[in-house]
Image 1: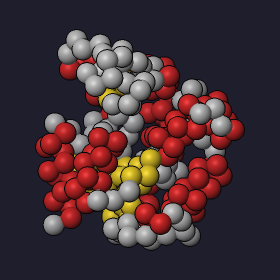
Image 2 (image 1 turned 135 degrees about the vertical axis):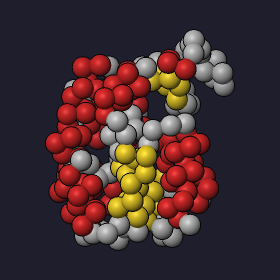
Image 3 (image 1 turned 90 degrees about the vertical axis):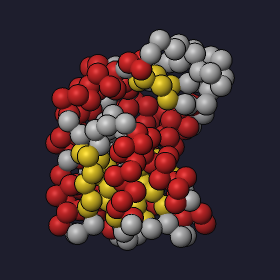
Length: 205
């Protein structure tokens, strides 16, 4: 299965992607994670991407497309994969069509008005990248690594507002694009992680 997971920032794409790849044994291709790895290692690609990400802007299509094309050519993608965070624009989707065929596009349908607080409350472990939400409780340290959680630079309120605006103008049109191709499946993305995953799992039955 060649899968894409779509949804607004904070909709839970990363969380659901982790559960999908574990259950169906697929490689998880997250452009966000690839860029964050390059940023941490201070590579040319990473530093270039950081200039855009920290401003809440999208990394230019050419850079992202080349990155994805290289990743899909690797051996572990031969029998399927899950794309998370790509495509984000119609030109990216059209370029992807020239590289591969997509089986199902999972769209997490959420209430955008409730996403801002969810994202601003997100925290991550700087060592293992495990996620936590401050709205869940008062924990300040990762239980595994024993270090304080931090807020990602792109999770501040001003940056999140910009990301949601970009999503509505540039990424939301992908819903219509993949609907027209007959591969889009929307699920209610509101609820607990397990509730949402149960709905997602039904797409494969």
